[in-house]
Image (tube, rainbow, N blue to C red; front, side, top):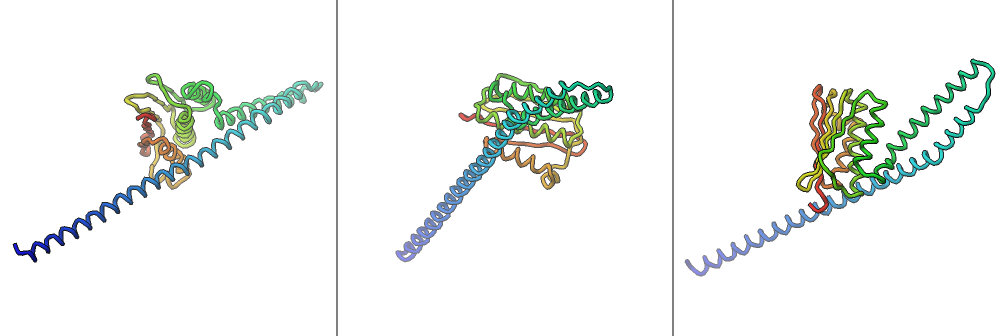
Length: 251
């Protein structure tokens, strides 16, 4: 091999190496940009959810501390009214029952906005209380099964509660289901949640373009914040299944 040919091959090798270095550099740059984009997206979503939770807390506090006592006072005043006529007494009693219904509905709304049990007793007790309240007043029976002892940090509990709450509300509103079953367990550094109903099911792609899409987006956003996985399996006439897998912080 002549010197000229050797120089040619060396030049080609250098060019190939330079091209390879440039390609690697661009790949690394794209990966870094993508990771930064994902990080910024998570921060934006978390900020939006934090604002929502703070607003929910404010409204729930206003309902509990302001409107609640006011309605109770109105009921006491109505009950203290003395009416001689039977027809008037029936009207007063009916007004009292209406106020009782308003107070009950207000407490349910307040609980939906801010589940105090979550902060005091943790996720499972909050879910038990929430599902018990819903079972009292809805056609759909909700069954909660906790498979083992759970260890979840407080800042994640609110996201998990909201996700299950959203799934239940979607089922109550859209599924026409008779039964909804919730299974929660922890294994190998992951929290796993399975929610299954026997309702009419839905077309997932179509739902994303309709009002249900807002609920699905909320589930996806909270799952992303927790670095988890969300799988939804639903077909018309076959019910709906949500599977959520969330890693521990240490995992």
